[in-house]
Image (cartoon, rainbow, N blue to C red):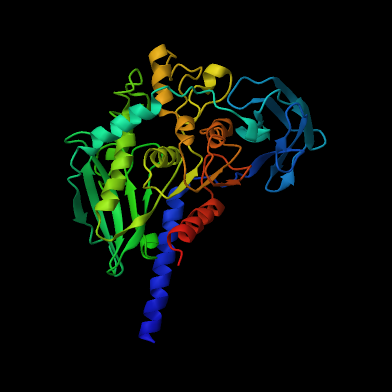
Length: 439
């Protein structure tokens, strides 16, 4: 009986840990408020052919009951760009149809509706695609793109790994050891930090490296996944320990690391993500240095900024065998210079908080655009995003995705924004299990 109870308890702990890991993936999609603006398109899949008209239907409800005589404001236009259609109307019959929207070229059209009700402002959106599989990137691949990155890798390879591992006894359990680790990056003294989880049972195991979304934060690792027989490594990109407590990370993000995606964009040799990209490659060196690694089965995974880093790392290093990238950022960075939405970090957007489009900055962006790395991907990958994403717009993601010629699976969740939903998380973990834990 004790053995049985111990087995049940172990399964519960693993399930709770896995849920925590999935929750970490999610970017906090809010529970709908009492008042909800519903905007829907007349095609269920929200896909259209170029020049085909779309009709949006708008309703406003409170706790499931449709409201009448509510005044709404609406704007329709290419995502993240100025509207081509706007107006104000009363929902006298409880609904409003907005027609006249279409696109003359492949891309995404967004309808944004707002209303003020009982002193509060509410917002709803719907985004539809027009021949998204025909979207092409605006980014120009530098003629020495491959040479530049091969040279960067060669220089980084000369830097000793100098790996350090500290056992975190309070995070470890009876089947998994959890470590706070670090290793040298692209130059002497520059380090990457992360959380490593390794099965305790003697043997050889596959591995997955997970790259972080944007921001500055601590990392918890993934002991639940490691308990299934998988080495897991989560890294931070900023060269600081990832197990500190308190508000140190918020202070850094609001202070010294605020605006890091724009640091030194004038130069390809000094841009912030140069050390980041090389740190991702060096993380593979670290995995290969582990005696528990099976030496063959290696995947990379991430969402948003982490999705971008997953694609970049796969393009740069043939040791990656499987790729998972959800709502990847840094795609088609010159989109705004060509009259359409670009990916995070919104370089060259028409906003004072972003950077002026100087020749040097535009040139540098070409060396870091995920759409250019996508052309070099050669291994199976899984991809997913939502049409209502306002951080990594689908136009920008498709510009990169359409450049990938390797085997790929795409899971679209049209209604979601910049999140990884529970349904996507299930796909995430199931796919990795099927590839890395296959018998």
